[in-house]
Length: 338
Ligand SMILES: *Cc1c(COP(=O)(O)O)cnc(C)c1O
Ligand code: SF4
View 1 (cartoon, helix red, strand yellow):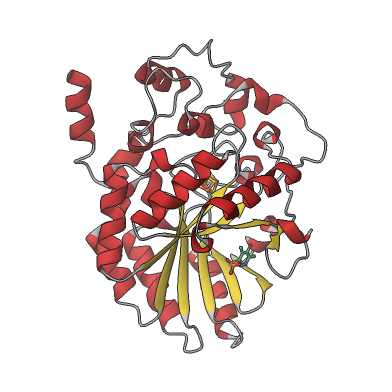
View 2 (tube, rainbow, N blue to C red):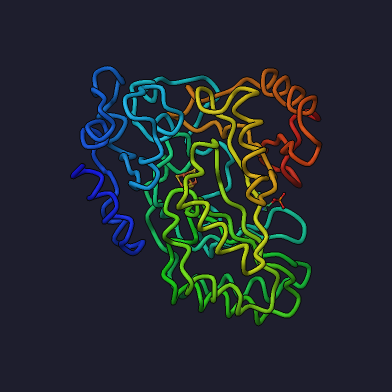
């Protein structure tokens, strides 16, 4: 009862406070879920370089007492992370460090990634970001200006993708300034935001934030990062509605993760539930082969089998594109063409 009261109180706080009160300790999270750390094969060594970090809003959607909960599996540091798998490295895509110079990564025609912060509200164990020591850095104002300058000088760029880290961890004032500067670039058509915050810290979707987006003359697209239908709690759904009420178009991308969403039932349920909330499934990514994430890997052949099952079960528009990131590619690569 007391716990419930505390939880209710927590969700009345603003997003910065909720973030400050996120779980950062394995024991605390296990205690909250009524689980023993021993049963879970947790690893302090795994959490040393890439600590546990989980906002309560996300943890609250986990099934209490279930050691195999698919949300828990995404965030809990476990012994499997210490296993070295062949083909896994610290920089599997090979281009992120170079991008941080001015934050702009211009790999695909007409689109640039603009990375202004390496911070996230949650530490997903499958993330490539786990191996970068500077992952909490924010781009300096000077570098941000250099990024804006770059986009200004490239009239072929029609879409800027704010990515990270998580761009929504920037303050409202910093985001407002950034979006204002981007909106002043005539040849830009769209600003796209990739963020997991609507899922893991929905309190971030404030009126002030939405006003910032809507003040832009550019079309705004948001891609949320949801991996499992259990992540879609009432607070998350409320955040979607706030965005949709202001005509912001929402897509979803997921990562295919062993033990989380690597089966037909879970993937179709995710697509169905997203669509019932007005969100279009966009990408299903194969895992980036980053050191410490091998236990999440779904073999390509099995991924293709799942895709085929999805195609045979769902309307075509509910089947996400199964893709992978390849160094030197001109776009994400559809897995069936590899
Ligand atoms: C994923 C990505 C994009 C966006 O690609 P879309 O297929 O348009 O979603 C752009 N630039 C880089 C470097 C990317 O990794
Ligand atoms: S970048 Fe995305 S996957 Fe990686 S830790 Fe942040 S939210 Fe999780």
